[in-house]
Amino acid sequence: MKIGIVPNFTREKTLNVTNEVIDYLEKYNIKYYFDRNNVDTFPIKVDKDNLASNLFEFTDIIIAIGGDGSFIHAAKDAAIHKKPVLCINAGNLAFLAGLEGNELAMIENLITGDYTSDKRMMLEIILKENNSESLLGYCLNDIAIARFGDIKLIDLDVYCNSKKINSYRGDGVVISTPTGSTAYSWSAGGPVIDPDLRCITLTPICTHSPLNRTFVFNENSEIMVKAPNSSQKICLSTDGDKSLELNSNFEIIIRQSKYYAEFIRIKSDEFFDILINKLT
Image 1 (cartoon, helix red, strand yellow):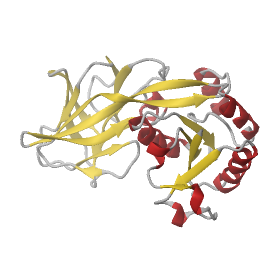
Image 2 (tube, rainbow, N blue to C red; image 1 turned 45 degrees about the horizontal axis):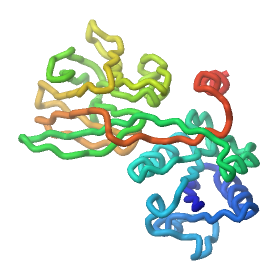
Image 3 (cartoon, helix red, strand yellow; image 1 turned 120 degrees about the horizontal axis):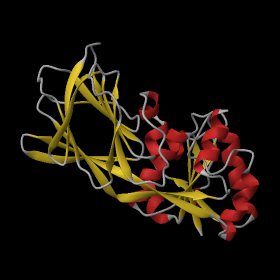
């Protein structure tokens, strides 16, 4: 077994958690590796024998250390290579964490294979401009299409399978997976959805539109968003990444991805147990 470790050292607890993870892996004689391309920024010294250039391709399992943002980025890269991820919390809420920082002794279960895994649906985002399409990337949580720069309302038209669903005037819309239902969509008033389900939700952000509730579409739906007003400043952000400013004639197409993120579960906690425990 070869394990890739992906730590986010911007989190205060990550250094201690990473060192403890290394200690446990060495205790069980498990080979572990870090990304050769990122190691120069690490606050720890890593032996050259523990470096890999193509970490997600080279290893069998990924251990991500940090918070939900760190987990999402690692899980998307791992999904493309069909590798499972164990998320260890070194942040705050971390709904996606499989282990907390004080539960590292349970890494033994990972070594012995005593664990299960959750497969979470992902979305792909297509940008259509001037009759050409390009893949912008993949989403595990959500895609926000929102106003950019000026504090002005924007107008967006939303279609499902080429049929117009609604027009929104407000700050924008959030399209999310069930995993992302506890992120931006929830803050915008959307429902909490069991991540075992397969669906796509669309929640308006601070809308003036009469139809201001969340839409829930089946997983095979193709959602398209465009702006009827070409003078608006609009941007797109995927999973909280840096915003991309969109041209006036854009169409954003969102549909289920062929890739799935796979999260390792060592504990027996159910989704709603985790949700309640994290928020109370």
